[in-house]
Image (cartoon, rainbow, N blue to C red; front, side):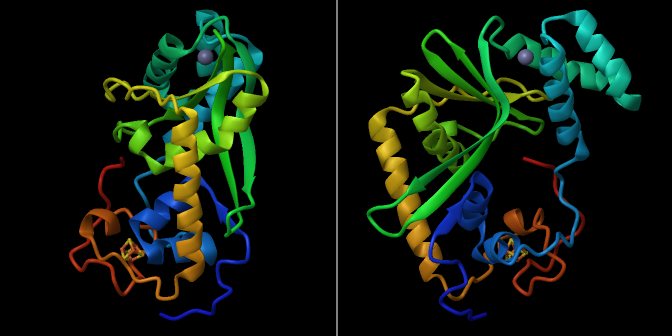
Length: 252
Ligand code: SF4
Ligand SMILES: [Zn+2]
């Protein structure tokens, strides 16, 4: 597949998901993030994640997740038929939530622009909760799958950290990023990511070179890797998909 030079645009837009897709498969990035094709095949990412995010937002808007009565009330109202499992997610969150911290916001959207050296790019990221305590901007993402690995090595966390860094710096705070794995069967969270200025500079250069490669890309070849293709939302229409795909794999 060959596409015109302008397909990605003069200013590349980066998000944790677009960069993650880019690193997994150029074709996936093209279909999902450049052409924005609707999803064709089911993926393992369940509705459960959206529900847990919504319930945590409601709990924090109405009070504290440490308030057992409030949590029970929210679960009764919105937990549905799997209320016990939902309560397990919220209990794991309450054990991780920095009680007494000041909430900077929930579902916080941030953007950061890189101008020079070329190419320009605009990065954006959403964080589920941003807390301030002990001189730290403690940014949290809620996860309902299984731990993937160290955040320092996860390109999605690296994008989030780079985008959030000015928010911390402007307030004289140290940035910390943490993923809360809330499924009762998920085990321990990975260690938090505390990027220092040198690390953030390295991430900026990493993103700049990704943006450069995105602008230069023409072929958008498929990765043809069963481990990646089996959860791809375009596997039934992609000529590079692995042939032995049946159903979907468990989520990450
Ligand atoms: S099916 Fe595989 S090769 Fe095709 S876009 Fe998806 S991940 Fe890439
Ligand atoms: Zn909380």
